Image (tube, rainbow, N blue to C red; front, side):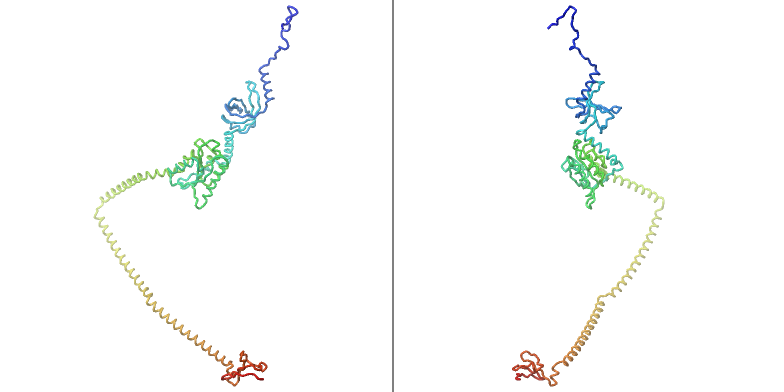
Length: 464
């Protein structure tokens, strides 16, 4: 609807209130956005990958946090108490805490970081660096702790998985370079939960077995094939590092490929790039000796040739010396020496024969003294004497016992009741029982009695 005017000069309000604008400066708008972001969003947790990382000389860190679809500018000031800030680099996945704000000079929003947590490989890298610094401070990586490997090992301990590719590589190289090398396998897992404890236990068991009389290991090889940082993480555990450091035997570490480094590599006495390289290092002495033996024939031939040349030179010098003296003189001296030796030899022979003759006579005399026939005669005489003595002693004993028996018989005869009977006495006994009757009261009427006299017996019956 058109606006009505009261006069030709009445144009109405040129700038009505509803059409009035508020124009903000760039600084004001940026400050308002900053207040809005800080007030409405504030502290947040955000995750992503670090890119475009740069460290300024002031100590501040600037980087971009991105994912598949977007990116976010971040800043970590030097004064923020953030741990592990020195480990930050491009490509790491992190979860960070910070305050969403606006950097006013460029009018871009950003996150002022106050805390960082590494994820995945980044977290493992942080743990790796922490343990590395800790063990390094304890002196476990010191060069003076490293022990040399025996040049010609005869038996080694092998700590690895019995089904992995590493053991096949090690066996192939050893079979080719030093077939006589004995291997004592301590099987264990080399990846996954609990693998580190099994590796440490295998190292401990090999050291205990080495202390047994049947043990005698020369070194221990700890190895596995290549893989990611997560696959190799068992060899970055502290328990494995301390088991390697406590080993009484030298330890060779061959974990992963040439570009892989683990804590076990730093603590071990020797680090090999691959399992095959470790087997080559262990068998280097024997393999080099094979080359030495292979060339021994040629060197021996050269030595013999040199010796023959030296002998030939000596012969030439002797020939020249012989030519300077008269040969007859040397021959006469040798003949004279031969005569002296012959005389001495005859003297020695005669002396030896005389010595043996005297010794033979002495032996003959000694043998005569111990002639068996003489010994038999002496032994026979001794037997005769012993026999005579035995007969005499037996006869004396018999006579003694005969006299004792006669004396006993005489005493028995004197005490015998028969002597009493000889003097006119008699012995009356019960005919039925043989009981001697000593009193009249013992006799009963009708009892049969037997009375023994000096000669004969009388049978009677008691009447009163």
